[in-house]
Image (cartoon, helix red, strand yellow):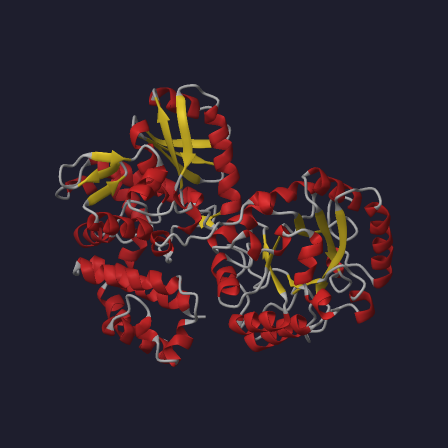
Length: 580
């Protein structure tokens, strides 16, 4: 799919137009088109070939022509012309937080600043304050931003949810012990559970912000304090992540939480709806336009209720149809962590796990699960201690013995089999058919051509003894992109064969992602499983990340196979369907 490439091109055009001082509506049109295409569930190249390009909201004749040119020639003449007009040095300056296109243009044209080093030098020497409407404060802000930028070079530009969420929980737990903090709630993309985030936003209600700033100095993970004020404080925590605290009055907390949770596009749509109803909404509350009287805002639910909407869960707030659904009372009842009855993907020290079979089983039982799927690696993955058929049989017998120990709890014997380079499974049929279920995934050959990887996956999906495909796109967030695969073909065959697709809850995988999982269920009716891919007992807690993906994918309890009791869940697996 070239959706991301096209979106990046349109975003770059918007940035260059802003540097030139072009019409703001023209700039906004490119930005909106970029966002629409990036979030598009379908392949834009396929839509173009089908003549449906202009059916995409926000794509008019001018932008459409540029997309056509890129998809047919691999370049955009208009973008190349803009690049020739705008010196690349200006784009370098845009990397610094707080420096927008217009300021970057002024710094380059009026002071000859061409890179970050010369920017720092000019700020230290007091040259920036010589420009009209700029002063010493701007120079200080630039120096702090450069320092922050350089610190952040040691970590990815966007932080994986699996890094940001534990850090946020540590901060919230630390501050919650103090009585002068009345309320504290994370907001932003973290609250929406996006797979990666930029900065962490936390809202607080407090009677004494000075005390908050004092106790933050003793935060164990604090690296440094960027700014400490009475309404906003910004800090950097290890490993170089910015955390912004905003002080909010109790009477406006709900409105502020809604506003700072976002997304920006969701909030714009809400404001448009409010205006139609004679209202305005912002971070301070909901107001009647006629007399500016505040009619709500203490509770977040009020904001949606006053607008005549169902309450919209944070995970859905991406302007992807959630407001329209809320207007009609058709939002789904999203899956929750308490709905999960068993972990569908668990490893033990029989292969590459850190804990014993007995420890993994006992932990799952103590967590209140009704079953656990033991799915060690198979023989082709030698580096992970993959099991041979002989070892598999020994494990099967041991699981039989362990099952006698438990009541109202079942240990399911599975395997995470390898899909070989020719699409075959690395175990014979007589072994595969003895399992309670079989998971299969790609663990090598990621750089094969798209057609070959697609063939391998389809071959595994068509295997009557393969029930679930693990981490179907193979991506590792911030480390490895998804392999090239014809996803619509994969989804088609998964539907045709009744194969379940996994949402792998490992924070660096989250695979399937929210967009793909939504398509799989809504368009193809495919069941999903959520598994932690645990290799130790602590990793069972990672199920919350899989739940986050599922909720962002609009999934209900009944869409996920491991929300069903095992006797009902297995009726949705192909091996049991085929036995009927």
